[in-house]
Amino acid sequence: MKSEPGVVRMEFITILDGMRVAKAHEYGEGTIKEAIIADLADNGVFPDPVLLAKFEEKKRQEDELHRQKLIRDGLLDPQEPQTKPKRTMTPEDQRLHQAKLKRDGYIHTHEEL
Image (cartoon, rainbow, N blue to C red; front, side, top):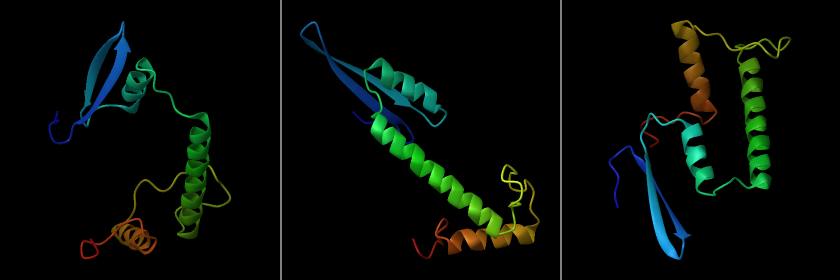
């Protein structure tokens, strides 16, 4: 079965009283992750604790790397690690930030794609 563009469809197949039962869930762009996690749990799908720990560690490392780059670029004060980046940037700050994101490989130019 196909879904509409922009819609993710998950189908869960279980055996209930010797019969095969299929349940389908469709998620549009407005779906929150908690709803998907709840549907997975309702159908007996749970995350592997080892993989979950690896994911959390990788996310922590990426967050720290991002924080270090914000400090390097002058958008975060190293003396106050809890400070968030500036909410408003001048057009020049935005241009420089975009250039640095391209340099670091987070944004690709149209020509490269």
